[in-house]
Length: 143
Image (cartoon, rainbow, N blue to C red; front, side, top):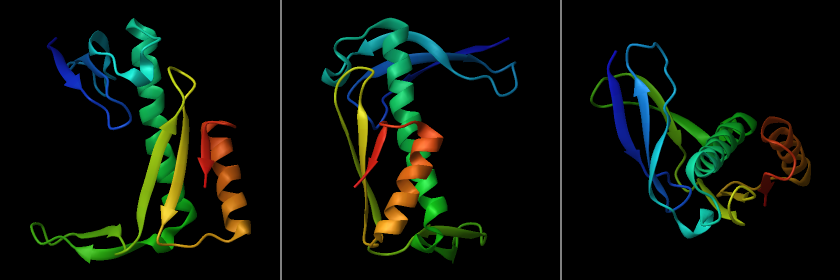
């Protein structure tokens, strides 16, 4: 058994925590170890509640980006990686994800915009319904 501790500064807030996992356990999920910095976004939380809120925000952001790319496969293009020669995909030029969280603590809501690709009303509604199903009603606004 070897325990590992690493710092985590997610791209969803200004918090920093340390998390721990055991490399002897296959697919071990890192768990809360300690708080290094509590950002203004989560100032009302501490300990495990802070870690859970940070993880929820990060999962919300990652699941949103994944769902958007499933809903709009035309925003990606194939290419061959120079270093390996393997086929991969990347965002098409001029298309990007923009997102920001509003709110504080455990009640933050992700505001998401797909830049460079127009969404019809039908597409936008379909995407919002998919996000509501996957992440939860009120957690993400597809604007």
